View 1 (cartoon, each protein chain N blue to C red):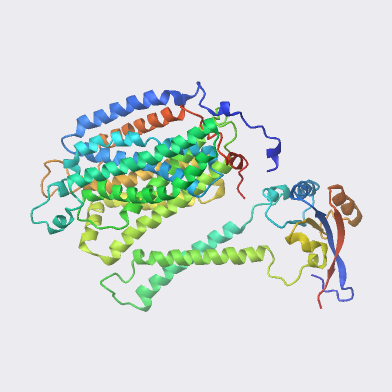
View 2 (cartoon, rainbow over the protein chains, first blue to last red):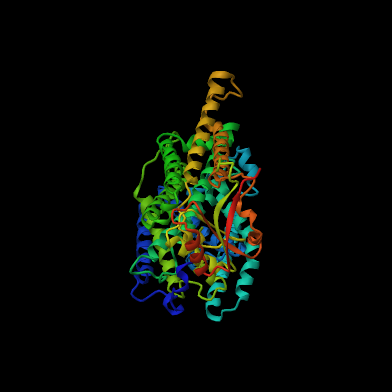
Length: 412
Length: 187
């Protein structure tokens, strides 16, 4: 508060991406890397099915971050938050990459026989899957996928358009509309992310039961988003090339850091709850999942998750100083983004069985080039779309009615 | 705390009254810069940034809470191991006598409980609470601290304290009134 009386704010014209910014090159470079990497991975692993599983992992990873961005924007309006206005456009742009993910779903559709053959072509004597056929059939699967993309794209573009229109006309009614929309949006978001996670990942192993799986994916998604969001904020406010011209301060980064830390604990809480209930009940239709995911050297990956996805970041990010310091926070964020990938990898990859593998095939952890290439490829396309959106309008909602509150924001 | 029963009155310090948060905020900065250490400010509502204007250091409470939380979590794990493996060696629904999985909820709960107790009682201790009386309550002017007045109290125990000089210093900061507060022993 003390110094803010004498502070001079940048003019709205300064809060757009300058021509000299490296972000201007990202759309082209990202798109080239994306297409090249995904193409190479597809050429290598299309017939074995390795590409299908690697691609699904990468797809669910970057989708989770876009969904996390959408969730963040929604709750800012539901809570009528003032602190986040300055950084909200970054999240709006992350969420508005959603149409890309509708297009990127096509390779999953083409590989459905690799991914979902358990329920697409069930064993005739399988009473459990016969019982689930009303939900797990191809037509309904496609209808649901369409509904998810309509929901997500509709919501993401609604918030993005209202917010960017307010840049032009300064009309406070855009804020009222977004607030009114935010409450049903929470319900729509919660239902769609839960069922999408069940459809696209859990249904690979269609005998498995877990009422935690939807919220497990949600928890990782929000954590992944906050880690990337915080990392982008650190990168975009670098001394010397601060795109925000000093308006985004340690205080805003500190709050994103608190969210990151909080969702480390939330993910752990959800992950443990799923494991603990299955361990305690010891029902075969539930434990069979862990039998696969803890088989062979996959167990070691599980321990890496306990240490690397919880204990290490929990202790590392606990202190206020670690969250406020650029370098330490960026280290924590990069580590968590890596761990979020390990988490999804451990959830999806143990279910991969190579095409034509012998009946006694045992899944084990072995990194293949397809895994890396798809991760980089989908990521390249994600950043290309994000940077494309970033330069289309101001990087801050410059006429948001709560902008002043965000400019003066300070933690106790 | 005086044990001298011959004189039941001694000087607690000076109380300066301000009429708005801006005035008390800038006065706090000046008191801080003048080098006073034993003093406090009192406002009817939280004034953002006042802790920095007063030059307050960060509270040691988070470290107390961390240690208490880890102690609670460790004790809970130890307790459950002792119950399962030592005191009541009973096999229940085919589970091991002790396993970390079912022990986590209680470990978490006891960690949180200890941390919560440490934060509440640590806070009371650091604030020197509870106490049934404070010398400032003898001032009728101070009653408006819960309504529309803002105060700075500099205690006589401060090394830089001098009744007349400190009084004129406080008046020069824009205080609308400065009064000497006596520390009356309650019988």
